[in-house]
Structures are given as C-alpha cells and as structure tokens.
Length: 125
Image 1 (cartoon, rainbow, N blue to C red):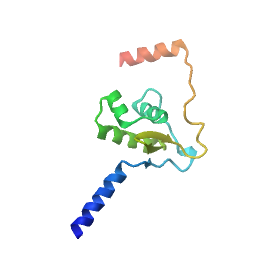
Image 2: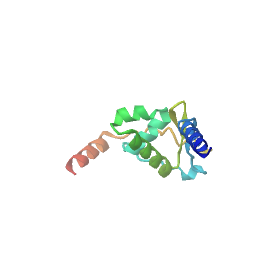
Image 3: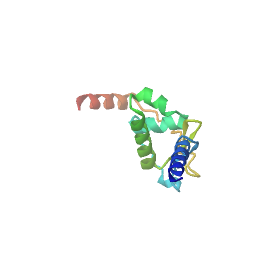
Image 4: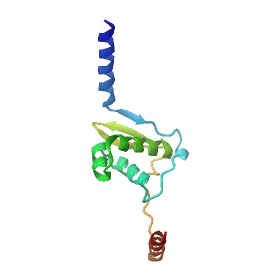
C-alpha cells in the first residue's frame, strides 16, 4: 500500500512539473525591478521572456542545454526582480503591479561618435 502511494505521489509531482504555473514570482514593488543593460545575455533572456518563448527556442538560439537555459532564466529573473509564468509550454515575463512602463525598454538613440568609440574600445581590450 505504501509503495502505491509513493508511486502515485511521483506521478502527481511529474504532472505538476510541466503544468501551467508561475515559475518565479515578480518583486513586490516596481522599485525593485532592475533590468540588465542592453546587449548582455541577461537582457536577451528578458527580451525572450517578454516576447513569449519556449525553452526549446532559447536552446536552439543559444546552443545551451535545457537545464542551462532554465538555470539562467531563473537567475536573471531573480536578480532583476521580474517573474516567469509558463502557459502552454511558453514562458512569459511577469512584472510587479505598476511596473508596466519598465518593459519594453525605450529605444535609446546614440550618436555615430558614441558607437565608434564603443567599437574601438571593445576591439582594443
């Protein structure tokens, strides 16, 4: 009898593992949201969540394994204060109430001189 209960518990746990749910809760307040800088891997992951992506899509674009994708998504979400919701195997970005103006980011226009300086600095290091 105990063996059957253990097996049924494992089956229930496996069914919940891939169910629709919130994987990471967002911060409680919008002031706690700190999005990463543009051009970083963390910013790419936040943008992928903002567009609604599956872990398979991120795997194919980055070349990472599935556990690496999930670990990095969790880390970035916790560090930046955003949440992750999975619905029908698609992961979405969750923001705290009142933080809707934080994402998507405003497009910053740079002067050509700034871009040239950034390119030369990255080449020389």
